[in-house]
Length: 243
Length: 243
DNA sequence: CTGACCAATGTGGTCTGACCAATTTGGTCG
DNA sequence: CGACCAAATTGGTCAGACCACATTGGTCAG
Image: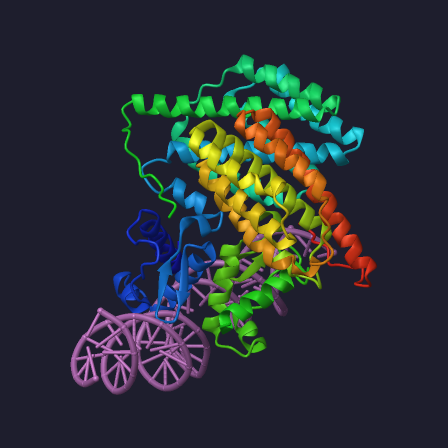
């Protein structure tokens, strides 16, 4: 990793962990250059990334911290790596948003897709309830289904958001490996319902199926966090304060 | 506006209008410095913003354009200002995503809110069907309701996304002023349904109300675009190619 | 003709040092 | 305490330099 990215990461962590209050001025570029044993140019480059990330406002006279709710979505990945492990509440929130957007994508796809396209998506659903998949293969099948739905939705904004959230989320969930226990029968049942709803182009049944998946995910991850903590991995974590 | 932001904006526009294919290398920093009559440092700072925006990948040997679906959500605002006026399809997509997230926020709020909090939100719904508001006051009331729901949802990710989309969307819709015709009776009817659904904490009825609002918005903006074009404002616009 | 290899050239990363416009700070005065 | 002002500080931009890494083009062997 190069120097300006190291500086940017370090400052992002400082800001997200609350070392600077909203509206407070960061140290000057010259002071930061001394602190990081770097040239001021590298500091400036780092600050430009933070500005685009939406967590600072740079003006002559100093850069100030802005409320987290005004940040770019890319801040989520940084929040996930903020402490020893991600905040359980944040993880659940991400899952809820992803589920909501996948549902929207599916409904949009329904409006526009040919029967062949629907069938193509359905062929991705079927392994989820007909096959006996390993956890890894199951995850890959879910990912593949979600990606195909997003691609077929025609909603670029939806795709950008979902992709961004998944890219930030997935690499940071490895700590829960071994703790995630999917209720396979329930999953099969919901997948089958989704398959049938797609075949019937039944918008309401699709909505119901996604709500069921969302609830299942919430339970699964809540239990995984609980199991992780019961395994002696501590309970205190750095909670995010939005503003 | 300062020089590095001018350079960043100009390059962003070039990239979004397709002047560089995905994977193609941008001109070198030295060449860009000549083109923009600037110092290479300013070009580097601009490029760091583009990298954080997610539209380029900077490596020794050159910076290359990445697929638009890998961009940060902040790219949406840039897409909206890409041509003479925003792309109608993109506008509808944004509205659909905002509606979907507002629905999620409302459902999340339902799970956690006290009766007082629900009543507080309902008091923001009522002007929308009981009062006779000007278009401007109506829009402000809708915005206020949406903001309050997002704040009360407790879903930070949802808030960040919705806020980001609204911030990018709202300033770019002024060209449609005078062309937006809201079906006031339908709006009142849906607002009343939402109010009742909130009072009853009826999750399904809330979902139905938001779907109705989303459909109404889609119609309203489609008609506004059509009216805008029928008014002699051209029909060709720059469509976004994701990858 | 194709693929491998290598030297030359080009590109990004970082640095030193300078100057100017805009903001902040601290002192003075009413 | 608030207003005002000069000095100090801060961000914005610049020129020029050097180094590590990537790209390009030429040569040679199969």
